[in-house]
Amino acid sequence: MTKTVVAITETTNTRSFNLRVFGCQMNSYDGELIRGAFSRAGYREELNPEAADVVLFHTCSVREHAEERVHSLLGALKRTKRERPHVVLGVVGCMADRESEELFEREPHVDLVCGSRHFPKLPKLVEKVISGEGRVLLVGDSDFAVDAPVRDLAGHPGGFSSQVAIMRGCDLNCSFCIVPSVRGRVESRPIKDILDECRRLVERGTTEISLLGQTIDSYGVDLSSSGSIPQLARLLDELAEVEGLRRIRLITLHPAYCNDELVEALARSPQFMRFLPIPLQSGSDSVLKRMKRGYTLDLYRKRIQKLREKMPDLELVSDWIVGFPGETERDFEASVDAMKEFGFLQSYVFQYSPRPGTPSTQLEDDVPAQEKGRRNRLLLDLQAEIARERTSSQVGKAGSLMLDLRPEKNPGYWRGKLQTGHSALLPDPDGLFRPGLQIPVQIQDWQGKELFVESVLSQKKVLEMQAKIPTAQVESSILDV
Ligand code: SF4
Image (cartoon, rainbow, N blue to C red; front, side):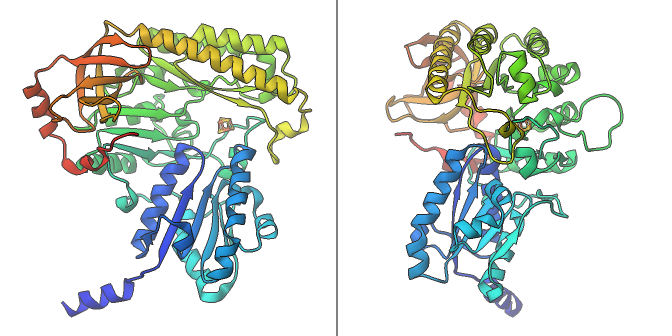
């Protein structure tokens, strides 16, 4: 008993940390890991940066705007640092790798710059700063895997939907992208570690898992392999055996890696959500070549044909860059045509801006800003029109809906996602259901913005299904506003 008391006293740390995360889903997942690391080290999370002892920004370098936002927030913390000089201020992630010691020059009040492959060490690095070792800089490659074999779930926010990184880095070199230079080459986690993590999450009430990777279909290219089946296909087959795991999302595929074996595995997975981010970026082969994307429009078309042949209900998501160097009106029209041809359910459209440190900065940024804006708006308008058509055409189909939250604007209903990624509303007048429950439904109606569905099971049957889900997820039952 005495020993326990001593241990608690020695590890108790009342210091607080504040973390703000920018960028992609991988960053948000890393944010969970960072929270877990600080919680393990005895810190508590403080939501007000002005009151925290350690203030960290987990950053993104993909777009200039995100970096400038971080610089502006850092600037606003100068006064805090003057008034509370013990506060440790740190920049973590892609921006730390890209700007490195220049960050100290531009922001002299920053104490810590920690790259994407080093953040699990953050509490120790903070201790170094506190112990008077001065500023700490740790960027570039590391000699340890970012993901521990057994993930500490202390930073997990709860809820039915979880993220699991299965790989890090990217082996490709798209000319506009900063990721390969800041995140390094592909580093895949062993299948058994991923399976173990997914099982532990399901035991805590997870029913949906998003598997994350920059090019997730290249998962395993660095692992030794027996046979020709891609490692991601193998992983999906193994995950099919995890009881209680209802849904798997994949974020994000690269068209070059999406071969027939993987398509077969996606089609036979009982959990794979038929909603696939597979960015095309441009419909013009000459632009794709300058982007160094590693495929032509025709190869992309073949991939999509195969995917839809095996999964006719599949919905697709794409990223697009408009105004890439040398993009002519004709090139842009090719993107318009491709958007129509493939019928994406969602698109993220970005106006090209050169990122320091990427190969495309060698190309002349020759499309005027106004023209980039026009192309951006045109693609977004077209996408909205296509999404409306695809969504309204769901009426009359069967589906399965995973409940997410009770929308304030629609009392008596749950909002959830169909397995095809469409948002839909299900009546639950008595408020008996919980998030994370997946219910077979019939799609009844579309009222301009929302699909309305009805359960095909009796309420008794649905409640029986619900009783089998561990209760940890209840905490995510929040109302949207
Ligand atoms: S595939 Fe291209 S865009 Fe995606 S992370 Fe790799 S280099 Fe960047």
